[in-house]
Amino acid sequence: ALPLIGGMLADRFLGMRKSVLFGGILLSLGHIMMAVEGHQAVFYAAGTTLVEDLQLASGQLLTAGTVLAEDITARDTSALKVFYFALALIVMGVGYLKPNISTIVGRLYAPEDPRRDSGFTIFYMGINIGSFVATLLCGWLGETYGWKYGFGAAGIGMIIGLITFTYGQKYLMGHAEPADPEKLKKSVLGPINVEWTIYLLSLPFLAVLWWLVQREHVVLLSQNIFLIISIVGLILYSMVYRKGEASNTVPFAIAGIAVAAACYAVLVNLHFLPGSEALAENIMYGSIALIVAFVIYGFMTHNSPEFARTVVLMILILSTVVFWALFEQSAGSMTLYADRVVDRSLGDVTFTASQFGSLNAGFIMLLAIPFAALWIFLAKRNLEPSTPVKFALGIIQVGLGFGALVFGSQFPNEAGQIAMIWLILAYLLHTTGELCLSPVGLSAVTKLSIGNVVGVSMGTWFLATALSETVATRIGRMAAIPTDAGETADIAGALATYTQLFEFLMWLGLGVGVFMLLISPVLRRWSHGIH
Image (cartoon, rainbow, N blue to C red; front, side, top):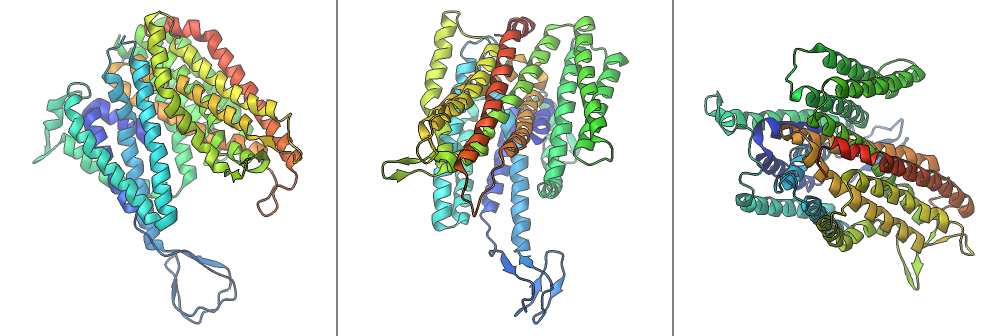
């Protein structure tokens, strides 16, 4: 939810450049604090007699000589508090930085500049180069010398990036400025102006984030609710944007009922409210139908280029939930698949299952520039696919990646394992799909959004990405495989289970991709000249 709030503050007050700078400072502090190490957790079995005093997390003090009645794991509570506060700094820093750095890239190009998608592809490559190098370096330092050095290196890297961004701000002047610079300078309390009020009020909110990062279920709830509110809110804003009909209560009433119904369903499904899950599911379907009716009402009564483009953007954003839910199997079921049923040996070398995950970043570094050049090449010849078509191609390719695994499952070796080439092919197809969708999607947000809510729209994009992580986890549970001391006893059974899951994901990707392809002419028409 923080990228949504960070985008909103940038749109209304700070501008993208100042937001990125403040976010970078918070991220640097967070990574440096992650370098604070505590002592390793110690396990005490029931019946153990303590030889020294032991302070529990609850605050209770067990004196030396106490015989424990139950198992206890003693952790360094002070270090844990620092750790969670560091996470809070990082979360807030990402909220300020992530949506707005992407928006800045979009501001560097004119609305109809055909190089925009290519520029975002190069930007995307830079992100993955940083991720790839940092993972190798910080991981090596952490495993070799201790994690305080790994996290410390991340902090140093963030500071270097912050200095680089600060030095390069002269190239961004006029592209990511505050909506009203004079408003930021207005005094709130003595020498403290509006800009510094925003910075200072962010600091107490760190305590809220410190509490939230320790409660995953509350974070999941906030993700769902903020996504619902942002999607309906952006459509509502685009509906009344041109006419300025704030006095017309009909669209506000429909939007309010739809949001309330959807939020109630989420609260029941996540067990924050008592109630029948079946009823909550029906209410959710009803709220979806109401949102669809809301959009139809908008086209009938408030149709404008801004409204139509916002609807297109929301459809594209929702389609990414499917893409990322499938793509992120690389961190779950595909890694377990590599570990349990793939022959990972090449001559005398045996690769670890996690090493296959680096294929994605490697393929992006190899293919990003060719993809960027391809879009420009096609644009010059009026052959470049529209944004909805690129999305469709991306989703189809992630489905085909699972198709490669399904096809490869028909050719196990004598040990019942699958050749690694099929997994490599799957990662390749997933990466080409990602390059068709993710950088293009970031570009689409900056093209299709109303100018003064680009940051909010970018935050909505990242909220949908976060939701897809949850969906990906639930999908991965469909292929739970029993193991014996970490080893898969029945490789053939495991292969059959994974193949069944991957076949479902293949058809899901192909189905949604083909659907997006079929509606792409309509989406392009609603885009009103935005390619």
